[in-house]
Length: 386
Ligand SMILES: NC(=O)c1ccc[n+]([C@@H]2O[C@H](COP(=O)([O-])OP(=O)(O)OC[C@H]3O[C@@H](n4cnc5c(N)ncnc54)[C@H](O)[C@@H]3O)[C@@H](O)[C@H]2O)c1
Ligand SMILES: [Fe+2]
Image (cartoon, rainbow, N blue to C red):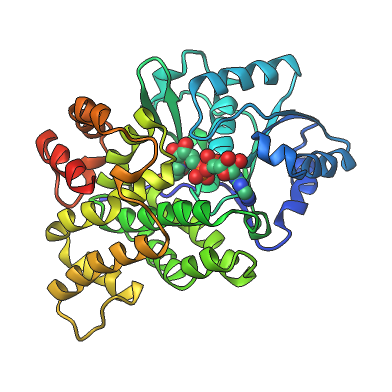
């Protein structure tokens, strides 16, 4: 069986990588672009810093900051409008997964016809987009290196997942210094999202020889750095480790797959607007416990890499230790249970849980899980995570 491995052709990693934006844009021979970001990144001055770096190379940019967390089709269309009005021909995506995903979809819509819903799913985008430089500020989704974008469909109340090599950024500037301002809860939630990426990539039915070592490296970096980054926001080494982990997590899952945690988490995000990292984190221990029997050896390796078990432990004991370790990690990172997530109301949950389960299953991600559930089993898992 063959495996396809796609990442951006240029990934620049390390402190100060953001400063290479001007040189990279010049190399791409662009002269007018749209910088896609959110309000926070405008207010903290980073959007202006990036624009002025480009200006020094004679490259003009307009800023579009109308991206909301877990972006919608409306955010994308508004950004596309700005792209066209300003006669731009390249895009910069600056921020967490939300601005980067919005930037990716604006880039492909510049060269492909509307409506964007036709591109949801796998390999449905006919033409490449315009040149795209992305700069992550969370650690994180790994979106800077993935051929994936997730956009909420506001009419159908669901998240559209698009996967296509045409969504790959041209250049990723991965600069951990930009992640140092993340508050503790954001650090925790996006950090657990990264861990879920690597674990799901490693246990997926689509795991392969290219993604396995990258996924394990990502897990090791998280074991060594996530809690420190949460407790000590100014710890450069921990921030660097987590930024690298996020990038590796993205490379791993996009070229293997995500599984049941992501399949079940997207409907929570779509219906209750719980941020993506948090909705993954609340499900992670419960879904891991359910999935272990399908890939015991792989989960036991993860437990050992995380430091929850040793070589002396049996695989069964390591599997149990993993579930316990992940529960404790959530506690240490102050991740609430699903029922405690502020925006999740029990009555609405009971009314919607069947639709959530069937939307989750329909996304295709649960089909890659080591144990593939039916709708009823997913409903039970939601209840268990409550
Ligand atoms: N394309 C992919 O491969 C992929 C993978 C996983 C998740 N996602 C998507 O990414 C989105 C989530 O992205 P995210 O978790 O990075 O968060 P985000 O981009 O939604 O940002 C969350 C909040 O953090 C703020 N923020 C960003 N950087 C900050 C910093 N350095 N300091 C302080 N605050 C900062 C933002 O302004 C925002 O208010 C979801 O829509 C999810 O579906 C995409
Ligand atoms: Fe994710």
